[in-house]
Image (cartoon, rainbow, N blue to C red; front, side):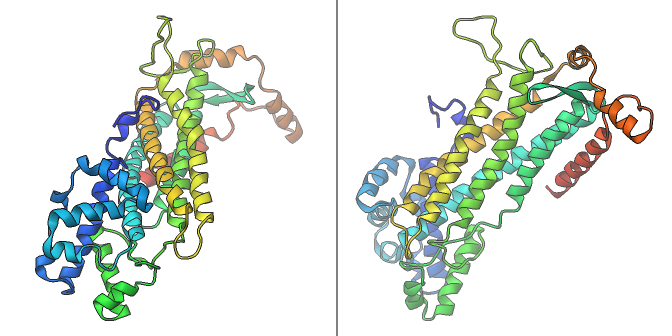
Length: 399
């Protein structure tokens, strides 16, 4: 996929694309049909290769039909029934409702998103840990509220970046296994209970579907949307961390500072001398846009009503898709930014020296404690770096 108004969109590939979502819905319907056959509810002749019956070329037809039904499932079912016929058409979708298919397909696409973000985060952690260790003692000026503050080290700055990335990774890791959705028309599994012969057997069908798709078995969650909001929040936390890195690179790449730079900058349409920090700019762009998308997910969840929401649920789909794709794009851009980062330690040391006397706090603390000042004033930076590196080590072992 490409998007002229979202440079870098191609990096997300097919993740949460229309074609991927259509394929996810077909996968859900196919898995449920297999469940019915395996449970000896539907005849063996009902089993069919639904994936072969639909292609990406059907996206437009399904999308156009969705306006008349409110969601894409009925249009998809019409195509599948027409192209399969016989027993597959007769048993297709029996016991499910449109929301079951929409939600479980969302989970399939969301899982692809989370897997890709986890992969990129692991690269970020390894890269930042190496940078932190390499530059742990390289002198640098710390700035607070944009102004010179105290001496620090380049490694300490990278350790701060690493902490944010690890926090984002922890949020992703803390997400529960994504759940299946198979509640039927009103979330009571009424139709499945009739098909299976008992409520217990109906619930076992949900378990079989979960196992087939690699999800957690779950009670119906038609109007309980915390799995969506938690996932959105975790993705935004990652974007926050990446934006901190990008913000520092954008600022430090100014020629008058010159401490950090992108390995490959971007040019200008009119100024050949420019070397713009394009990756950092695009990462910052994402961080400005994704929090409102996550807020939309919360608003949609708060709009839940009765046993199926009248608008809130519908508002959620595109917000989750856009948030997911934007986050994947930013994740890969951050990988490129970090792996190509240029660090000018000489310039960092020069800027620190040019800041003048920054040791007033050190002298005041020493006088208060009745002691003499102790060398270079970087406090517990080395110990703090060690703690972050240890945390990064544990992360790498766990992944």
